[in-house]
Image (tube, rainbow, N blue to C red; front, side):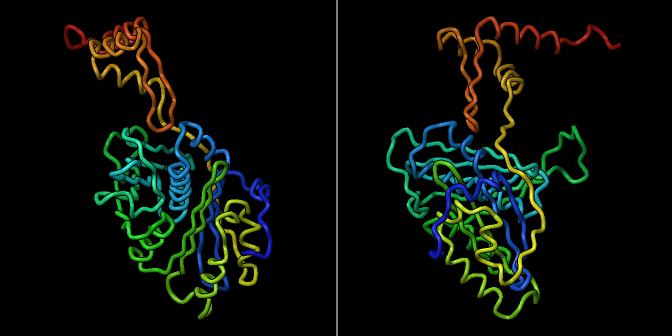
Amino acid sequence: MNDASPTPDAARSDGDRLTRFLIEGAGVRGVHVHLDQAWRQIRERAEYPAAAAELLGEAAAAAALFTGHAKVEGRLSVQLRGDGALRTLFAECTAAGTLRGIVQLSDDGGEVSRDLRQLGPDAVLAITIENPPIGGRAGDDRDPARYQGLVALDSDSLSGAFEDYFRQSEQLPTRLLLAADGERAAGLMLQKLPGDGGDEDGWTRAGALFDTLQPAELLAWDTATLLTRLYHEDGVQVLGGKPLSFACSCSRERVEAMLVSLGQDEAEAAAAAADGEAHIRCEFCGQSYRFGAEQIARLFATAATELAAPDRLQ
């Protein structure tokens, strides 16, 4: 829409949030996601080229969007692998609304392209859902139920690639727009309701109005402003939503368990090679964990005590 300039502060009332809605007169359902602080916390974990950062922001918004569209009880991730300067992009959103993400770049450098068709002949884009095992309970150590869909890389953008994927996989008309800058990331997804919901021209009208939305407006407008400006004539019903935030599942305890699994000799060698202090960095959130020689010795002494078996059955 070009009849009004987007106001940067307009989105602040939403903060980090997912909203599901229904455009009643058009027979269209939708999901809107806006990320502020959550995106900045993901972004500040590492320095990325602008194109890589924008792709990561769009992927994070997409992962959150899809948790509002599909049944996700565990976590949903978007992963992009390429052959060139961008090797791996990973963004994840859990059912609880926590997000994390990372980009891994080639050691050889090179310019990251935003055009998905330029990522190399073996590039892969996937959406993966991991839900708890059916009938599982807290502490269940069975593998989660895993579902994965491969997304064709025939489009130049993530928005176009995901739009085509949902249109083809679900056989329902779909529109999707993603946007990200250094401060915010956002996404909007529309899908025609199955059956005969809405009037005959409802989807066509919703799509025409969707096409007027610019990325800068998607980033700047809160949910109420966006839906009112685009779809007030058809009537919009908010169905629900949830807050979103940055979080990572890494912890010092998990890193300690990883060091123990490596073995004491290898852990001590890692510390010796780094001036007496082993340095482990979480690849997802960038959190650093440091272990000195004395800490490593205590860690394995504790592990030996906890794992020691009794001399006989008791």
